[in-house]
Image 1 (cartoon, rainbow, N blue to C red):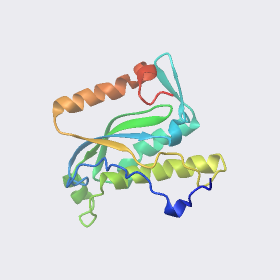
Image 2: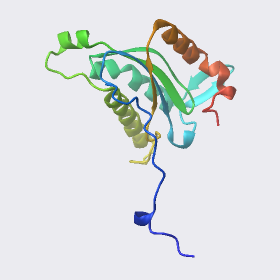
Image 3: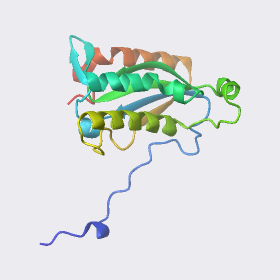
Image 4: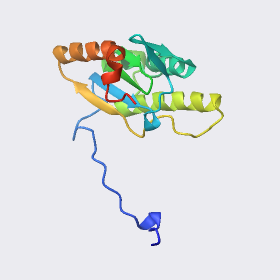
Amino acid sequence: MPRPHPATMTYPTRKNPRLKDYDYASAGAYFVTICTQRKQAIFGQIAQGLMELNPYGQQAERAWLEIPEHFPAVDLDEFIVMPNHMHGIVLFDHERARHASPLQQAPSLGTVVGGFKSAVARWINQQRATLGEPVWQRNYHEHVIRNEKSLSEIREYIANNPLKWELDKYYV
């Protein structure tokens, strides 16, 4: 039986993971999880409950820490680079950004995450001479942090992530 042409195939509609009518450029705290393509463990390994970053993981960590240099409205909180994903808390503070650059528009969470993903992918692809090969999954997971209790729980989750690696849903 002949295979259908890709242009005529129908695909399931992806469910949009974003909150409807929410402004992801608004001031606040966001918890993000960004996974590698096909959940490949490219950033290092867990040994005795600690994450050991390889050069790719070190670059991911470096790029994450550089986010506030590129986006004055953004501060970083707890984060961790795991073998095949990373978790981080991103804080948007628009007052500080207005003082730094009054004409600059506040970025959205998607812009910040996209810039991070692009920087890491570009560096990794240059190292392995595979320009254009995907490093990350197409999207990312985010959660709007609404109160201090939630912020505290997420910080603890991130800090303990290497200890619970074998139970992690991203463990492959």
